Image 1: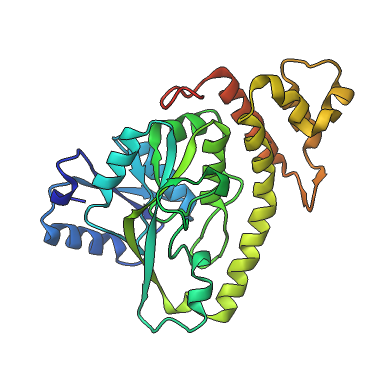
Image 2 (image 1 turned 90 degrees about the vertical axis):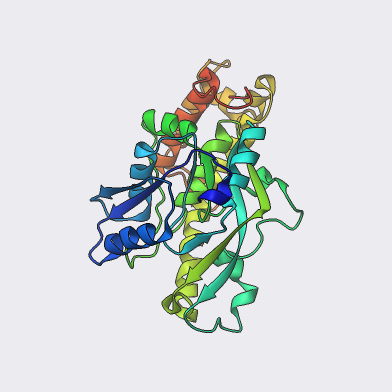
Amino acid sequence: MGPADGGIPSGDRHRGNNCSDDTLDVVRAAWKESGESIPLRIVKEAVPGLSPARIRGLKTANFEYAVFCDDDNWLAPDYASRAFGVMDRNPGIGILGGSSHAVSDVELPDWFDGVKEDYAVGLQSSGGAGDVSGRGYLWGAGMVFRRSVLESIIGKGITSVLSDRKGKELSSGGDSEICKWYLMLGYSLWYDPALKYTHFLERSRLTRDYYAKLKEKQAEAYGLLQIYDSFAEVVRLPLSERKRAYFKGICKILLGKSPSNLEERALSLLSGKKIGSCVADPGIVRNASLLLRMQREGVVTFGNGRT
């Protein structure tokens, strides 16, 4: 960000997330040397993990559009200006993602190119710029989002069930869960390959053993995220069609004649029940219930009016 961003008001928030090394000193020195005029504010978050750090940054940001940029994501100079233009022209977009290429301090292994998408590297769609809501998620690296929407979601007591990295502990799904939240409120996911960034991968992440663990965690998250998908699809239907879509009429048989809170009562029945190959996590069921209520009540009004 900076002069290349066309004078768009912007600011940087670096979250000191339980740092035990010289990261914060490096940040201050690098920012001073860059000569950029964008304000830098370092905010400390005591709870370890990527997700708590991001929430802290969200709560202290000043502007409507925000981007998740980790220390291994190097955004192109025009990233902020391009993202601003796309989001500002399209109020129905909730989350925007870009494309990346990988670099490392070692040579990338010969098997990497075939699995690079699992590392959030490459293109997120083969069809060029456009709506990728059907994909169901965007990579967290370089993810641009409407801050007011996420603040409203968190303000309703919705919390992430899935998490991302905590130090050396590998976990997955936190970014995708946020995407599901936006989809359930009627917002779209958008991809623009002109938004470019470099993704740095440490050598420790480029081993067969690490990749196997990564895929295991992604598979665990996928099973839980399917629950959100089921309800996100129904939310996009006209209200008159939703009740039939919910479990193909089973809910009506169980609950009687179409109560106004049918969706929430159906969700309560599902808590802890097996759906397909996974068990309906109570936390996700609770989140889905709250999101359905937000969508129905039109709590989130910034956007294209679908919420």
